[in-house]
Length: 67
Image (cartoon, rainbow, N blue to C red; front, side, top):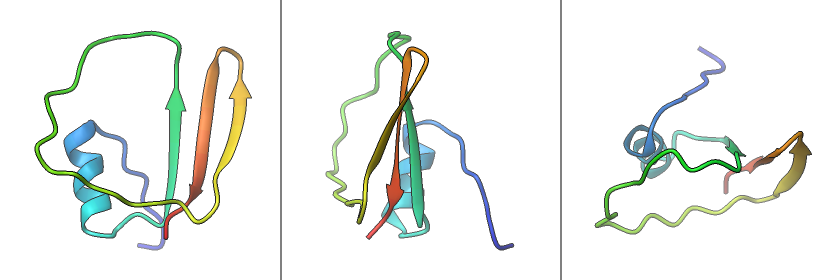
């Protein structure tokens, strides 16, 4: 497998980041609130090497390569 797209909730995405399995991250931010996340007990700090931002209609897309 050369490429894999992971689309999931906070726990699935955090697991991939925690294990260092994500090379690139794409986040879509929509101007609508659908619910909340449980309190995060463990801090996870991973940074993007480069970050790009683009508006797509009402949404904002942020993407970049992970360090």
